[in-house]
Image (cartoon, rainbow, N blue to C red):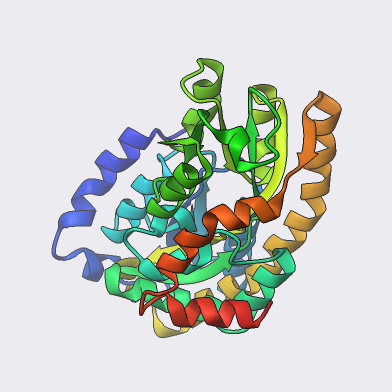
Length: 331
């Protein structure tokens, strides 16, 4: 299996040469293999969706256009994958929107606390124009947005105690993505936010570097975090989705027909991802309960009240306010 170091070393020259685009141009008869990455395991819904894209492209082009997919973080963290895609070292990557907040401001609207009321609300907003607007925002930074995949309700889990109100988080070290929104939100809730990559969370809880994290049920199960954290608290403080991106260099090197095919196939993959998600989330919840994880509801009203100043701050910003209003109008 290729290592991340080997892959990056082999890719570095192509990423920095001025002739990259010309050398990568795809003719009507050339075979083109697009490299895609994901930090999640091989049967995770987003991985399944990108695999489906590759199979569809290969079938529709009679093998001329393919995807080589590296899952389970084989090529590094999400933050590294974003930069690799921007500079052409890889072609495609699926990343969590929270990891994009600082570089792509429109994604902040998707990550605000309690901006979405449910998975159904998120899907409705993404399908009725909000998703397209966010995807267009990537064009300014050497990327092309292909699709937005929802990823369930983000909730708290930890090794110490049930979380029912913000007061129960006081003093706990909680892993968050490297997003100003999540760092500030955790501080407002009373926790000590600790930005870490997903791959560092399990060992962080095992060694007591952190007390817990927040994520969706599917990731809680697939990452096996439930083996370290015995308390799951249904806070639903965020429904921030995932985003599938392709390098602008890679996209532009395709023929116009192949670009259109890729865009259409990526959009169609959203329903594939959602089907896999819906089928696997309840199974994941049952598995962690059977393992002994203790589940509890929280006082969502108390969390909403504490988060209101953060929400008010971001929704007064000229670039965020219109998108936030569109989302809430679809509630």
